[in-house]
Length: 154
Image (tube, rainbow, N blue to C red):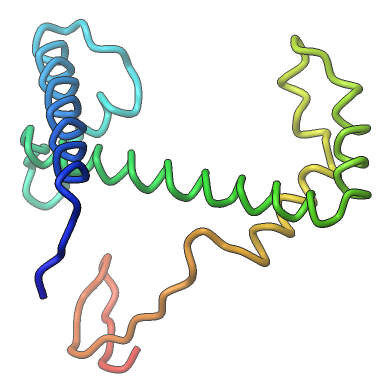
């Protein structure tokens, strides 16, 4: 079926894709000149497929970055929105999180893992409103996956 979008949605998508293409091309150039930082993007772009020995072409990398961009943006935003909603519904928990966070100063961000109430709020949020619901798949034909045989119906 055709997917109908507003004109400005397509324009925005093209702008994002142009920007990602520009950044990807610049990173590829930096990789070739040996000036690229040693980060995840460089590792993804330089790690060869173990079966084919090939690395991503620019267009393939643009697709991957677009997926990371959209998935990371949407899932994080959804989780945060639901957490804020739940704290608004339960002001006593909002107070507990606020009180717990008061003990940290801006130079102690590394201690955020000690905020146990906040952790529990986010875990509860993810349990109630997971941004990515579980999807179950069933093999319709025999397959080999990572040196394992997958039977029909698995």
